[in-house]
Image (cartoon, rainbow over all chains, first blue to last red; front, top):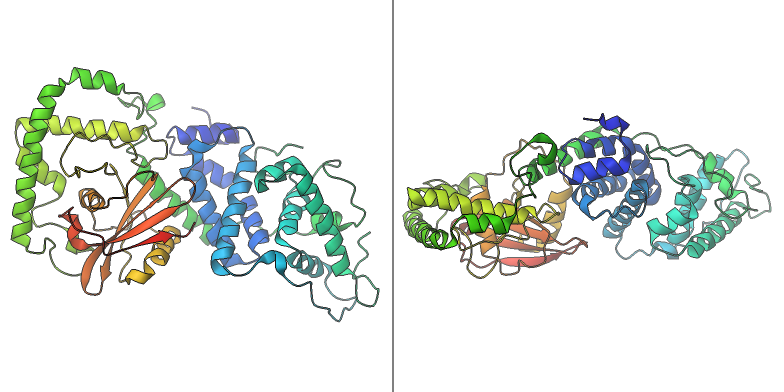
Length: 185
Length: 291
């Protein structure tokens, strides 16, 4: 038998669906860090992300037979993880529409402020759809087409959300006094 | 760009998106990775996956490469049924079912409420053994072979369901199966949910599905008892996954049953503990599960 580590994702998933008891473990080992990062970036809460990523891998385990192979396994896993993360978020905050969050409150900016925290805070303040698009495309390196598949929207929608999300973040990162925390341009 | 197949992506290649005049894309790309999945979470998920694997293994052996006789899905049911002389099967299955009924009534009478004791999981063990054992004993002799055949056929039919559940339970009037509908051949039995109230049903089920669990943790509920309880639930169509777990309602033993469809819809039922030996009882409560 081939070493599992030598097999590609689609073959592993197929073997798992056929009953190979070890194949999914290799998929889990291979993708767990990436899906953890995605869940963490989507939920912004380690506890919720833990539950979400567990949900995601369990769903993938159970529904491997439904994978049609018309996308990459990684894209499929991204979709399952994003959906699990959103489900978990809405269970915790069922009445909260993340897209309706107020813009970031004005802060007393200092040049010593950690730019990284600023970027993360700004990302947290933009509407959910834009944040997800930016998370997938800009942070996880998915193509627009892959992100569209993950989110179940048209490619044009992903492009639009990315563009508007970046503009919104840039606006948030500009200080009230006209100084940038870091010039993003 | 296409994603790499090893789970690690290289930096996004240029040209996959429009030009970004804001520079935000570069800022986002420069953010550090959150780091590897925490070890305790890795263990938790591996444990949960092991439970899933233990559940599905009998139904989906990796037969094609390991030489198991049936390979889970390769048996021609039509040929099997022809080979088995269906007339004889029906007659002897009827005798076996009647024997089981007599045994079940006797056991129920002996136990009063039908459930021994009052605390948690051990309460579900009938004094004279599981329903499967009862069926074998009651049918006795020649019935055993045919009952085994019937169980095999049900298992094969369930094996056609790629979900790993038991949606296709093509029962032929065998022991422990309600007359008005198919019963999941092999619901997944989870550890006890402990004390609960009827209004907590959906939340407790949700917690049970996400809580870390040990594969070695015993439920106290046997497969036969879980099937008996499922027989009491009228709504069995369209589910892909079936579950059962013991619980307690006040001082009384109870069984929680729940099922899910592939699209995430789910429903749960709170059953009296008596359902373990009496499939004619009614649910005490039910609830729609969150997706």
